[in-house]
Amino acid sequence: MTVPKLLNVRDFQAAAAQILDPVHADYFAGGARDEITLAENETAFDRISLLPRVLRGRPAPDLTVDLVGSPTSMPIFLSPTAFHRLAHPEGEAATARAAAAAGTVMIAAMASTVAVEEVAAQGTALWFQLYLQPDLAFTESVIQRAAAAGCRALVLTVDSAVFGSHERDNRHDFHQLPDGLHCENMRDAGEVRPIQMSPEFSWKHLRWLQSVTDLPVILKGILHPDDAILAVEHGAAAVIVSNHGGRQLDTTPASIRALPAVVRAVGGRIPVLLDGGIRRGTDVVKALALGATAVGVGRPVVWGLAVDGGKGVSAVLEILRAELEHTLLLCGYGSVRELVAGLLLLPPGEY
Ligand SMILES: Cc1cc2nc3c(=O)[nH]c(=O)nc-3n(C[C@H](O)[C@H](O)[C@H](O)COP(=O)(O)O)c2cc1C
Ligand SMILES: CCCCC(=O)C(=O)O
Image (cartoon, rainbow, N blue to C red; front, side):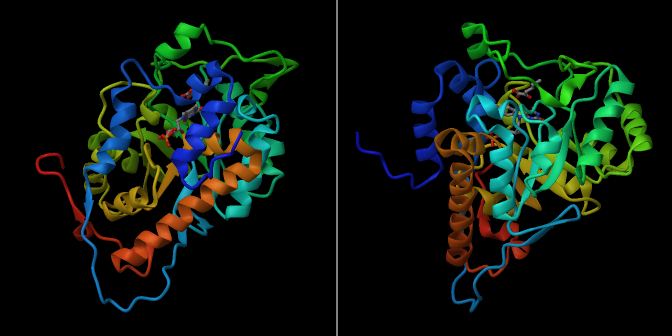
C-alpha cells in the first residue's frame, strides 16, 4: 500500500478515519443532531474572502502572542477533547509533548484518559478544562489537583447544561469507555466518578469557583454577546467563543459568525478566543482579523494523534503554523497582532 503524503489537516482527517476503530472515529468526528453547526463551523470560513495588501515591506511575520498570561509561539492552542487514549495508547501524554514542542498552550480535558499530573509532567503550558460537578467538594478537590499539577488557568465549559445528543454514538450504543480506559481525573477514593452535567449551575457558581481558586477562570462556550458582557462583569479572565465543535446545541451559528458581536460586547476588556472549524492557516487569519487573540483546534489534534501519536500532533501543529505564516506573508502583514477586519471581504448580510 502506498502511504499518501500528509500535506494538510484534511489529509490527517482522512488518514485517521482509516486507522481509528469506526465507532471511535464517529465519536471524534460527530456533532449534535443533524450536524448543521458542525458543517457550518468550517464552511463559514470559506465564505469569507481575504483582500491582501501589497508592497508593504514587512519582515518575516511574528506569530507570538500572550495567551492570558502564557506566552506562546503562535496564536493556536489545543482545545480540550476527551478520551485521547481512544486515538493512541499514549493518549494525552503524547498530545502534551507535542504542545510543549510547539511552544503553545494545551487545555487538558477533565475527561482525560491520562491523569492531569502525568499530562503536566510533559512540560507544556497547561490549562485545565472543568465541568462543574453537583458535588462541589469533589469539584474543589479536582481543581486543587489541577493547580498542584501546575495548570495555569481553569477553563470552565459553560455550554453543557446537559450532554449534547450525538446520534452517531447512539446508533453505535457507544456510551462507555472500553475496558482499561478511565477518566483519570475523576478518581475518588479508589472509584472513578462519572462526569455529570447540570442545568442548575449559574453565575453564582462562577463566583464560588473564583472563591476557591487563585487561577484565572476562562469561560468556554460563549456565543451570545450578553453572556460575554456578564462574563466580563463576573471577572472572567477571557472567553472562548465556541459551540463545542457543533456537539452541543445544533443550529447555533458557526463560531466565526458569533465572534464579531462578542468582540464588540467585550470591547477589549478581556481577550476573546475562538474554536470550531479551524482547518487552515487562512482560517486562523480570518478569526484574528475579526478580533480573536488566538484560536483553538479540537479534532485536528485527535487526527494527528491517531495517525502518529505525539509526532502526528506535532505535524498537524506545524502544518497550521506554516500555513499561518505563509498567509500573513501573502496578505502583507508582519505580525498576527496587527491583523484588522479590513483584510476581509465578508459575505453580505451574514455579519
Ligand atoms: C471528540 C471531542 C471531544 C471533546 N471533548 C470536550 C470536553 O471534554 N470538554 C470541552 O469543553 N470541549 C470538548 N470538545 C469541544 C472542543 O473543545 C472544541 O470546542 C471543538 O472541538 C472545536 O472544534 P473543532 O473540532 O472543529 O476544532 C470536544 C470536541 C471533540 C471533537
Ligand atoms: C464527559 C465527556 C464529555 C466529552 C465532550 O465534551 C464531548 O464529547 O464533546
